[in-house]
Image (cartoon, rainbow, N blue to C red):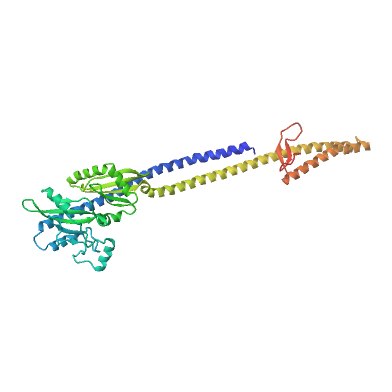
Length: 441
């Protein structure tokens, strides 16, 4: 079979395979884009719902602190001050001894704490914590039984500066091993003069552990106060995300929006934006608690599409397998077609060669029959002429027949092969040549 014929069939196979693979590839890329957009939207919705819940929890903490400190401030001087503070503190303590705050206390106008201060070393019934439980908590927070700052003049100054102010929410303050927030309500006389302040003190770490930790696994989470100071960061990209947000001025605008939204009776402002952090693109979802705190969650684009990517890779594997099976099927079909066509060509060649052989043998037999007829009819009676006839034309015909028989035997053994030569008078249309470079005959 000629080489150009083989190449044509293989080109046809390749063309058909490519044409059939194009829809599969097109669908794959279409689904890739669709899955990525869908997964990003689904993940963004899930993160927004999660941060909404955090915002509500944070607002609940602040609202409870406002109510409890205000009530205690109103009741100061009306009975056992320590018992009053303990009753308020137990509302923030979990059954296992953990607390949402570090303690509650009363601050005098000179910025000093009264002896009635109560650290969060009591259980949810107001009883002292068991020594074993207290020891375990102290391993994580050594300051638990004495969490107080050296002075609270900043609380007194803020409340005294504005006689109409009833509640104070501090910025993050440095304390040993942590950063803390102080929430305070004022106790004033009839003339509005500040007599004392009831404070609740909470650490930024407590906010994360008690409000955010359960839903933040594997996420880059951060908390910032209204001055732009970070209370905590969790995750390798959290700090970079918070600093980028603060540096762009958007943190300040978000907190301003949070103040306006809080005035309408809502917890705070909400939003999201894409960030590029050192070549890593991701979505920042943020919420404010009024204009006091700002919490953000940064999620990389890769993490957002991870689940969709698993499905897409599975579909891609199936698509690739389908293309490979298609190519394998086409290759097998093309190979069989080539083989079948080759056999047909070989059969046609043998038929033509058989015709050539029969023609040559017939010619030689005619010669033989002619000479035998001459002798047998008595037309040649001279012994010398008879010998010449059988020794000349007859011998040549026999030699030619023997040569053709030898060629057929060589072809049957695979020692020789046929090559098309064309037709020239009585000569054969084929030439017979030896395999592996042997000379033709």
